Length: 361
Ligand SMILES: [Fe+2]
Image 1 (cartoon, rainbow, N blue to C red):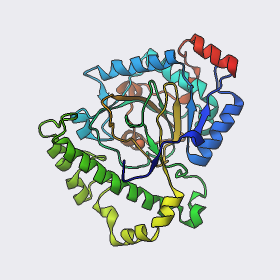
Image 2: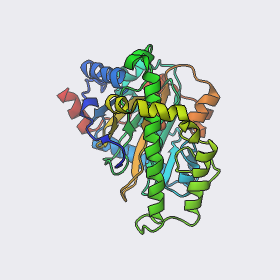
Image 3: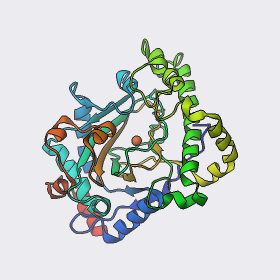
């Protein structure tokens, strides 16, 4: 996005995955990953999955996406779902899906168990697909007290909309004391500034799409994306913006006091916070603290972006809070799973490249 400075250099947040003889991350690798998670709120573990394992994940996701009865997630944007700009849906707890999730959890056990006890619930297993013409999500925090991961089952380019993060904006004991005791206020100002640019970017893009043969608008799509009254947290929806009906970003966020603070802190905001965009290679896994500021950008390429996602609670979680922020599949709701279940479950059989991975460690 031209208006926002976004770095594509993720090297400061990457740790090459090294596995021990049991197929778990080595102690040294876990230590490095935890340091990243604690310092920046996220870590990118490269080459955690072999190509064969990533393909298993991709096939499971494709099967779900092609199922007309799939369980779609509504938390991001009903309008994007309606016009097939995005397809976020939860995966059923079938044995192959559980095996794939178990493989990830077992490999990442040292990192996950630092934050989540064995009895903590699996909140969702989902696939997040975005297509050309989708809107850029607003910068937001997911519900707090959760560890989430994204697994790249194929290469994701920045044009396809690899997730954008604002490192160091996660909460921890005393985090408000940072930035001269102004951490919360400065982070919120930074978020508002980003979201203003995203609002303009989405609106301009939608306007251009009216005459763009590469991503033609469906009949009624422009009206719906700008004036819809549907649940819609991540659209340039003028109606919801003006009425203050969007909790992520609306006119309510732009009162005179806020505008003054944005002006007063304009230099500090640019110095203290930075947007970095991931472009994970196949097999990489991003783990992040759910309250870290982040956003799923729009897909600006003709190639669909697929990503596998999974979230585990760090503490007890209220059911309504859970279902408001995450989309557990009906099978998972009927038969809940916890981290311990996945750590004990049968994983995907090890492929030759994984065995090679262990020898290198
Ligand atoms: Fe999110």
